[in-house]
Image (cartoon, rainbow, N blue to C red; front, side):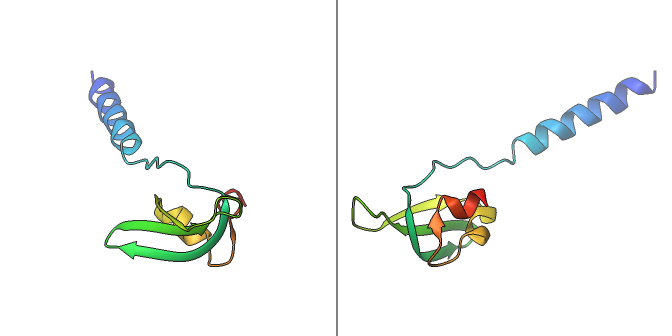
Amino acid sequence: MHRRPAAVLVAAGVLALAGCAQNFDQGPEGKVTEKVKDGKKFYLVVDPAKAGGEKKFRVSKYDYHDCNRGSRYPKCVDD
């Protein structure tokens, strides 16, 4: 009888953590020209090589920290 409440707590914990994952659309390939932090939201500004014109898009805090100015996106996330 004691195993059932523990299993319910474990399942609830797993579901709570799964809800915390951040999935943002991948931005265009290109060179990172700027990084912007707005409160708890993180953005990269990328200059696409072919299309021209900078694009700003939201990323996870981990992608924000992995990509430095001058690096190539999305390679900086994959490395």
